[in-house]
Amino acid sequence: MRWAVLAALAIGLLLLALYPLVATGYGIRFMLQLFMWVALAQSWNLISGLTGYVSFGHVAFFGTGAYAGAILVTTHGWHWGPASLAGGVAAVILALIIGYPCLRLKGPYFAIAMLGLNEVMRVLVSYFEGLTGGGSGLSLPTLHASGQIYYAMGAAALAVTGAAHLLITSRVGLRFMTIREDEIAAEAMGINTERYKLYAFLLSAFVPGVVGGFFARDQGYIEPISVFPLLTTITMIVMVLFGGKGTIWGPVLGAVTLFVFQELVWARFLYLHQIFFGAIIVFVVLLMPRGILGVLQERYRLPRTI
Amino acid sequence: MDDGHLLEIRDLTKHFGGVVAVNRCSLVLAPGKIYGLIGPNGSGKTTLFNCITGLERRDAGEVFFRGERIDGLKPHQVAHRGIGRTFQIIRVFPELTALENLLVVTREPFEVAYRRAQELLRFVTLDLLENEYAGNLSYGQQKLLEFIRVLMRDPELILLDEPAAGVNRTLLNELLAAITRLRDQGKTILIVEHDMKVVMGLCEKLFVLDYGEKIAEGPPGVIQADPRVIEAYFGR
Image (tube, rainbow over the protein chains, first blue to last red):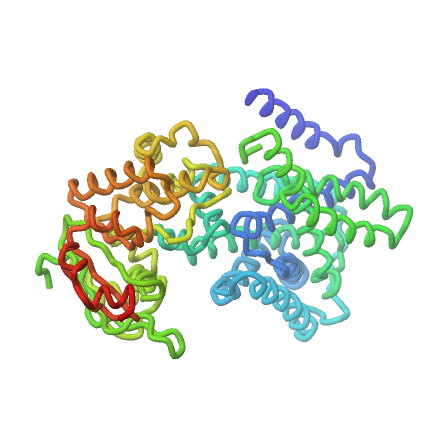
């Protein structure tokens, strides 16, 4: 069973790696966006799925990475690869500054603080025109790198899913989960909850920052509203809730299902997909709060790692 | 400051707004004994536990554990000093399995922790349920799980908040036997309990709280006859 799963994974990865050889331009761009959503959803899962601290501003890390990466590319002439990694580091630094005070807040207060962070970042980026181009945005030099960005996004999605696997099957991940389960009991049992919350938060901020850098390069032009939209955070959340929060494959399943569906609906009805998204939120919250995988795990008594 | 005491509380006071939950309470625990903490509802027993374990900040007073001052420490730091506790309302990690509930609280190498966890699960006959989510266990089973989760860290001082409440007689006898065995291993146990039969049979010394003040202490026989205690429980 274990070998069958590993073999299927290996074949799947091989096919994805070979895909650009046969794909159309549209196909590659579709897939790289899909990878981006997997990476973002899985990152959100690390903080909110495992520790239960619901972040409503995770796109702040994405936007910070996008701007850090784009600035390094345009004004310092960096290659977009290292620039995006630096974007990830910038996101982690932001997470450190904001996480230290905000992770002391409980429940809805943390969610609201994170929502505020996103708004503040957007305003800051608009204000410092000299560095960021303000409201008129930043244009990156023309470059056709969709093929490379395809692999970069894929690697980011793979890395963060690998990290989720390592965490969920280890005692560090279990300690993250005790914070979700009962923070007071965790403290009383000797778990330094403040430290573990911060670890989870920093981990969850890195990949969105990196992916933000890739996104900036892929788009060639960014502006405050294009990299700090609240809708991006909401999409991450819905994908994870739909697939199954706190699981390894739930965020992947949620991102793939919803992104493919959204793309199909979007192509035909421009505004209908927003209604559809709202409907999914209501459906999931009311009928299956544990998501698809959560329901399957419960019904068939599967381990959390499936 | 090592005078053979395991835990010493001096003049501990805790207010909640205008309510004095614990009022200048002092007590001393020697190692290797079972102590009881009794008193009417709302007399400050759980608040005292919370102040010892760092879950509440005391307003005044000092707490020493093995000669080291521990008031002002965070709960996880107190736990690392060697104090473990259970809660009045069960606080297992419901979406972790029974086994994971135990493994997650130690930093020992996995093999050692796993062996110890299995021993403890057998000890309370939960070994067949090790892969069950804690939230799916019965009330009594969760209570036992919470108890052995404390033992997982091998603490010197164990604070039990109403261990007998809601546990059936058979299970209770096993639990009491386990507590006695821990004492025989040199552990010190402080129990908050309403069941007088349990307290009288198990504890070597009792402390009685009323309106946050310690109104009496002594062996169970003496306490039972103490007029102040009778008054606190039954009124004048």
